[in-house]
Length: 133
Image (cartoon, rainbow, N blue to C red):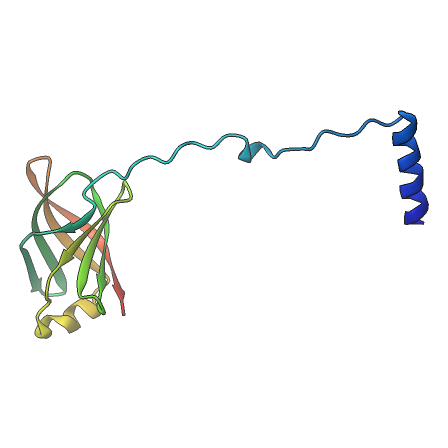
């Protein structure tokens, strides 16, 4: 049945009774917005870091002026780096050695208070902590 249908459709095209259709292009692929550069502090930074714990709260103080608001903190155990991910997509990597007595404190924490400088002011953000093994 499909062979007969194809033959009849071919005959219609040859006679000019049926016009070839324009290829349909999906609407979402017609125009792409150009990529915007990352906003914030991106790449490795050199800054002092202080880790404190009181009761069940962990505070991470980083002595650096950030240009974007931090969204979460990632601790990569294998590389021994702390990444501060910001809302604009930038990731500031802090190469620091976490003392062995504080490793368990970080592994068991879900949230932490991140103290930074933003717009010339000292600011504390409550952010999530992601631990990568």
